[in-house]
Amino acid sequence: QVQLVESGGGLVQAGGSLGLSCAASGRTSSISFMGWFRQAPGKEREFVAAINWSLGSRSVADSVKGRFTISRDNTKNTVYLQMNSLKPEDTAVYYCAIRPRGASGYDYWGQGTQVTVSS
Image (cartoon, rainbow, N blue to C red; front, side, top):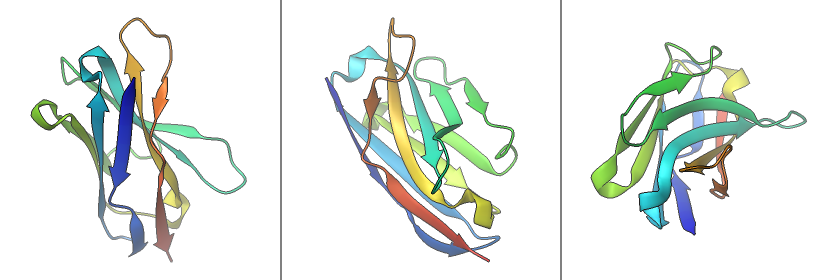
């Protein structure tokens, strides 16, 4: 089992920046990927970014490419999402998640943190 605790959400004006963090605890040795997803009101949850825990390679959704950066600190078992040039359409609950080794999907999820971007 792995537990995830997110922090860093809040309210920001369009064009501003926010940073999210997500700390993992428990069986962190099982982590293959850590990712960020978001869900806006009335919409399905969507992928934002992911990072390979060992290699550090990254993937980012086209909608946030060039604005959002995912990074990790293996020593702290923490993944970060730096969000710049925020837009009102970035408003959502942001979730971090873990894809364990051997799994086909993300099995562990954080509680979510609200990000609201005002116009």
